[in-house]
Length: 294
Length: 324
Image (tube, rainbow over all chains, first blue to last red; front, side, top):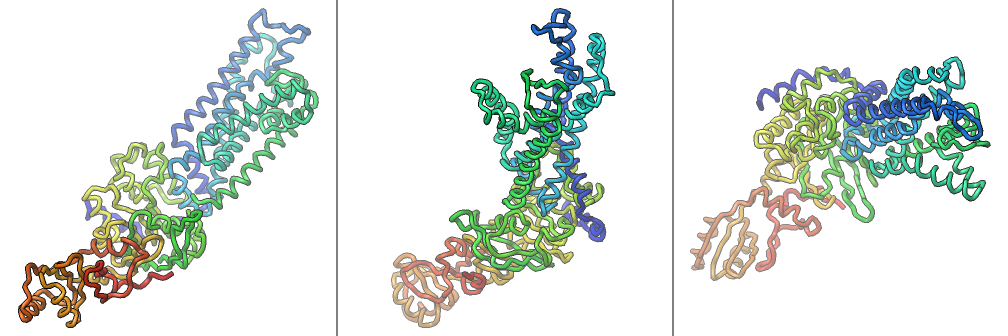
């Protein structure tokens, strides 16, 4: 074996001249890295299943005759839950799986030592980080859009049964459907940034879930209880709360809490706030990624 | 070619690497030797741009590593075995690494065969033994067919056949004109593989010399003599230019005179000898002495404190490099 393996090294010497580090190559590498881990397949499968399942559940609920036109003030179910909202509602849980994917994309490399291989191949580091970001964002966007599409298909019979067939001619509906994918993809980018900052899987997942789920809950309760304007404004500008405005229906109703959200941010303004948060986190993460010892 | 100039790394108050300068030449295997915690891995990580030097600089093939347009074809590195995601298969890991530099799949297959990983290539790295992890690390290092190889403890966890394989591979790669820089904490291993040795202890370079010089220095002959008239014999020997040290009253360690000479001198002076044993200090002993305490490392030889301490038998020929 010894003699054979040593001589096998010989025919390679002249060829390597064609090898060159390119951003396209780094993108391809990050694509391979993303798709060759079981955690990716799991988190993405969970995202789609959860989205379709929750959409189906809501569509089924409005088909229960007694529930159909409930609402003490005479508002119908479809006012609270227009069909576009029903089709996309699963994003709120699905985003958590995507957030885990975003965190793991970078913390998984730190915890296993892979990051040293990555930075050996791409010693300038930032191309690897941005390639990872691009691959993650596109994947999250496409998979969430797939989840939305499947949700629309699966709920179509139930919705049309109620005369609520999804109208794709409405620009608001298109904004909500595509916006769900855009919002979730942006959350994946934010999670990647937080993961790169903290370099710890547990810490980063805790932070992301706290930011998306726990902090908004607490602030909204405090704001409601005290009526404090400052708390209400902080709440409005939280990354998740602001970003979710992209999925707001025409009426000024918060799809999550059902509460009236007068003074809430316009959809694209809200999304802009989330993008601002994400860019800020990514820039700080990139600077530290470049400076810190791997 | 690797050139380090005043390379320093501090972690808070602790200095891991203390202003070291050295050059690793192409066409030969350079061993980087030192006890655990001496600063070998830190130095190698700084060469690879993974750790930022506190001071000083290091270049590979004329440029800082990160400045190369095609880093993997310049340098291949094996840094502490498991720099690999445990959830990915060996093949996919290599494929992802190769993709960055547009290295073809055929080369991935080639390094897998070269390192004997065929049977486990599709298995996830998490289940690998240390030896297989080591082979995968070496496969990654060879992927870009690099001009310079940096191997941190490459034989760790390898079976005897694997150790022999690494040794032959390192020598073969050097014979092709490549720079091969490998670290070890085992003098015996490095002595068999390397042409040139850099010894590091407590972050400083203790020795930097061709293996031959270190072997000659380390293999210096000592003669152990047991005699009731130790003081008298020591005086006579010292007068003849020998170096005499002693650990206990009736026992002398003598260098500079061979056993027959000592016997004749003793007989001529009527001194009774109870033991006369030529002792060849091994490389390992020389290395132990070198690294035992780099601060107390002595540069003057030919001291002759009878009944006090042991002189390093290996210091004289390899004292260069211990700057600052």
